[in-house]
Length: 269
Image (tube, rainbow, N blue to C red):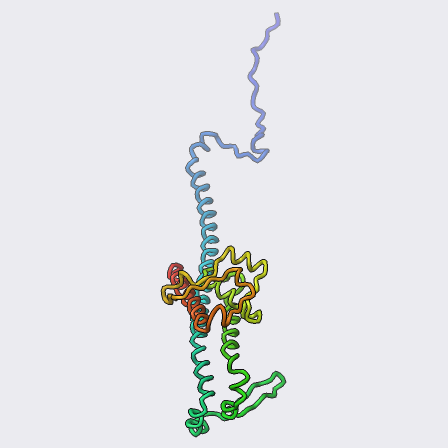
């Protein structure tokens, strides 16, 4: 009778399939036991990423602060210029009145001839110039009759155009009512001393009021002026405002810029 051997268990052929496919042959229990190390590695990567993000955010914040600081300094400087410009009208008026007073000019002529360069000069682009005797033109009679009445308007027109252009027509320093007032006064001064409102100007006025109410604490005014579309065609000088009112508007805008942006500068620091 044929004897049969009991079935043999299959032996491993030794093929390491896991390693052949790049998988580390590590027991699952060993991986589980190393969870803390894995978490530490992930945590370190997250920390580095967050640190990089914070560095970028800090750099951006620093740039924003520098920009705000620069804007505040420019606004404060412009505020001083507007105030000084208003004060310049006093010097202008005093000089004009001096030139009209023949008695005073005669009395100070000897001193002026000794202390003052007698020849004035207006330079030209081609290298030449207009030269004139200062005392002769101060005493010139035609000065009284032809341009005296226009000099104040000429000076104030230049001051308003200069101030409005420095503030910018896009509200670079905000839309406070006292700043908006300068914007509209500048436009009137530049359009033959009359208020003329474009559609854009009317829309701006409806969105950003322009008046002297609620002015800066450093320069309160007791006269209320407000720009409205009803002013179309009205003369700025000397129908809507007098010289002193325009000076008030310039000073009010100047003090506002100084006060508001000085506070903002302290907050930035």
